[in-house]
Image (cartoon, rainbow, N blue to C red; front, side):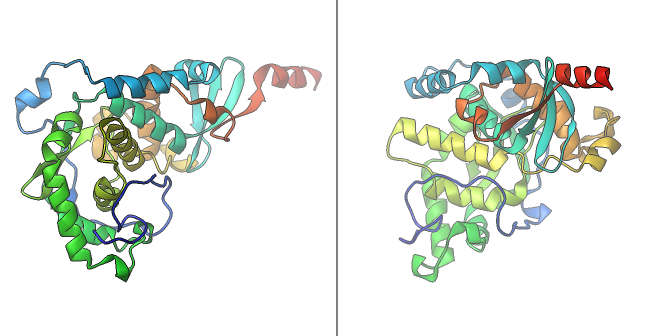
Length: 305
């Protein structure tokens, strides 16, 4: 790629969260997701292989050492109360109510899932292979990519990214189930069963596999890959309160196509978080988790009324 700033240039960096800027619209014929299984039944039923990589163990140990015990208890034992708005949900733990920014929590949880399942991830097959060079050209139109004319021709940047990822294809497939064939993405990893990434972010994710991953050494490479996946897969919208109420009685029998973000939060994402999330201590002070009420105090107020 060219030598400019942002995603258009080479080198590593930290990806932005959130969904600022214009969302790219990718035709379903290019990268519509279909449910799972890889390239054969053997992939779907293969045995779990314990990861022996020192770098992954180091990253997981860092997660555990930086976790907050009180928040861990909250997420492990919480009761889902409802959706607050497009970004927040209300959870109860014991006698206290908390407003939780689920975008930030989901991103950190998905990072941890990538590390925990390293080398053992199932695949989400794309309905049609998505050419990497074309995805990069699409991504460079997004203001978040930071592309400038001085960075070079988008087609040439796309070709360079495709070449780099072809060189890394065997490693990406073995460890992360990111499958590349003939210069195109054909499968993505299943970080959480029943949860798929927002495919309108696929072009920017593909570009950032070249610009935001530190390919120089194993541990920073694995760390930046896991964080990039988490940024791509994170939940950007919980759903409106009305949507959550209308879907409260929905069941899996309604089919995946009928599932709203609010349904996915309650029945897919939060159960996964309850099972294994180790929240970083920073989330206790950065407004990701905020206590808004204590039911014991509310009861005392009602008793006096």
